[in-house]
Length: 111
Picture (cartoon, rainbow, N blue to C red):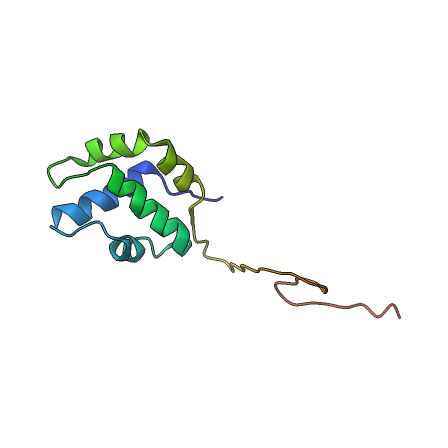
């Protein structure tokens, strides 16, 4: 079962970071989202959308979650970010001829 990053999880991260007096930066988000499958471009987009919400350290976690829930752009981003599974995760980009085998390849000679 795939678990997607939710507004509740993201609001908890934002709240924890801001209550410590730390800015919600790309580096801070990257550190907090280590267990999630997120690209650098998604991370940048996430940080930019979070900045647009104008969150403050005076807001509650619930207020932050409501702001996140009210952003269609953030909702779309969150749907693409999945929790890294404990099994093998193989990400491949393939172009050209040949095959795209991610694990052991078994070739039967037909004998």
